[in-house]
Image (cartoon, rainbow, N blue to C red; front, side, top):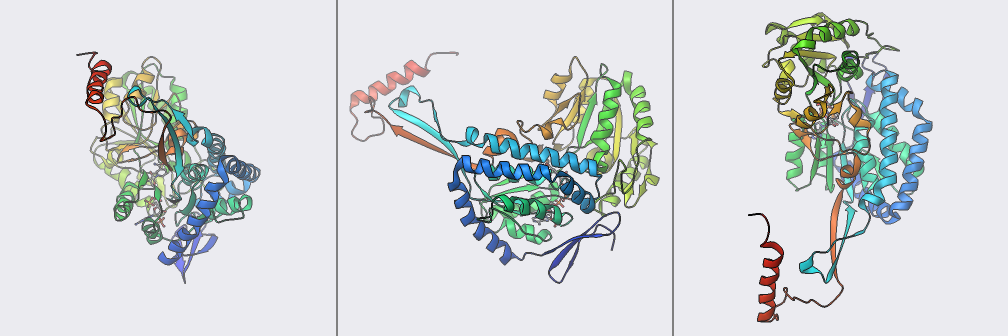
Length: 497
Ligand code: NDP
């Protein structure tokens, strides 16, 4: 058994460190009946939580946030031990999650609470009211690569909106998932508002079929299809945060030193196991060679190892074969490795690998690699860069480095988010929505859209005066019908032709 492979034995799931094989946590595996029971408990807890109201929920969520921040080092250390990522990467991830809890708690009432909206002339005797109600129970299925931030991007927003949550963490990171829920239970001890169910894919499948009112899934595009098919059986709405193949465009007026720094962080931090990690770089011809030279020189300085190094192990042992295959396939098709190459793959580690001259049909250009590799492609212009960046079925995030045309290029990128002159900044910006297009999924976490994602809009009209034009009545007069026609012509028949 490779280190890092979760072990299921006698109804228990045990997670291990991917570099050392050390046991990190053991948890009971939830059967379909256990998942159904958790959802039934959550149904009751959700009603209680919703009835608390925005102010009381805000207070509890803020207490959760305080304890979380007080124990930042503890969760960073646990995430390092269970998933292998460097402690600093885990600290940054937790810091970002704390920011999201804070924003969701503080803004739920403003975004979701009851408000009057404008009436329109034809229904002027009615007032219009809108509020966003919780679904009840939201199921969340999470991945291992960002076991704190990714699930909390759904969970914190679902909770702030007034839902109960049943969370199935990845089998690679159950202890981190349990830690999050245990900490929440300290500040909400009355009811099981946030529960965790552990297990493999079949536990996730059971959650899809358990009668949750909505399911938030984060994981690979392949599993997303299975999840959607299961949810379709019961018409359970789904949010899909799936994989990516993010591109970085470097225009000729870019600050190259800043671009190199960002490219390395965007592509190689967390050992490249980042859904919005940079995997493909398109550099305009006049700066291409200088950029590659600087990138390669800096990439060679990065350290790889278990403790205190800049790149940790590959968390999921099976992913190592995918990374190796992508590197070998690119080289077989004529690419060159200016840093790393097949010999960079030294399980459980993969050392930085920079590939140039990679043809467009190579796996390293078309499919998610999820390792510390970058391809750099020379392009004649920023327009060509944009065209090639957009020519994959994924569309999650991306980055543009440049001055004059940077924002225009960012707007043209086929993705849910783009950072200009930085990488990944959008993930920590709690005011902005996060999610993909195409094979990267649909729906949004974070920001106002992320709060609304876990709610049902409730619309109410209230009649406040007799109707001057009783259009919705069998007992209207012929004159009312003539007035209706006149009103429609007056309001809508004039304007652009
Ligand atoms: P997987 O798709 O393998 O697994 C995701 C989750 O789904 C896990 O909890 C897994 O459980 C569970 N699962 C597996 N099979 C089923 C099933 N049949 N029904 C229901 N649930 C199931 O993804 P990874 O964990 O490997 O995560 C990496 C992927 O996640 C990458 O593609 C990455 O890009 C993407 N990702 C996307 C993000 C985004 O925001 N768009 C953010 C982070 C990652 P188990 O682990 O027990 O098999």
